[in-house]
Image 1 (spheres, rainbow, N blue to C red):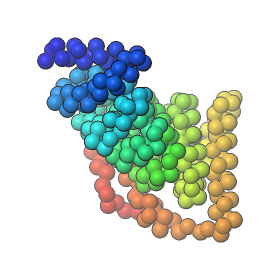
Image 2: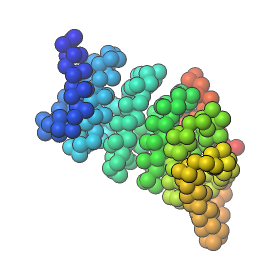
Image 3: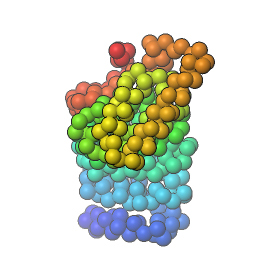
Image 4: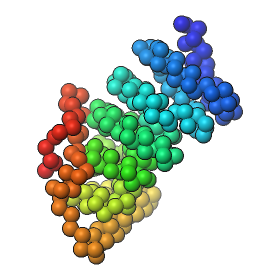
Length: 277
């Protein structure tokens, strides 16, 4: 058992090399790593080394094919519950999902299998900037696909994101704010209905406030301006089309936003919750 652990740790370092990753793909070694991790699921250190290996290998197309299957994704998402307080394991599950989600079909599976778990992790680690940055970087990637945005919105992703973006402590983390702004841009650009939700929740005011706070940051100003232009364009389309979306019906269609912003680990996410106010 100790020898296997040493070998796994060595592999986690070895796969930081691109050629080693390619050889792993040829040997179809990812399935072996997944099986080893499953048999020693109670060994936190071993699981962490397995995850680091999977993350390193997720850049290879063949490895992506294996890791992007529903069975493999379910195994990864289970770790977010089993090791919910382990920030390293949470981070590597999220970052591995991010690498896999560069493929549109896999990104849809990642969203279907993992969105509820990602939102629980965001709520649980609401004060950990690194974890939040990883999660919202993933959401930004997922938001390139409209179907994924539907899931992000229905699970309360926009509500949580805007709450973080107007939090004074979080606002000091420019990288996190940049990630949030880019995610908002992707969301509002996808559909008029999503733009309406962001607008109703004060998204425009939050982005404008960030611009005032960071008036000397050209990169943030550019990203924020892009997001505001996208929001205005979509809202104008609504007016031009005479499209009037009833808010209650919209929320009923998209689902309830079941995330506790305070990150109370004792609050469960339920399927049937009252319509948001």
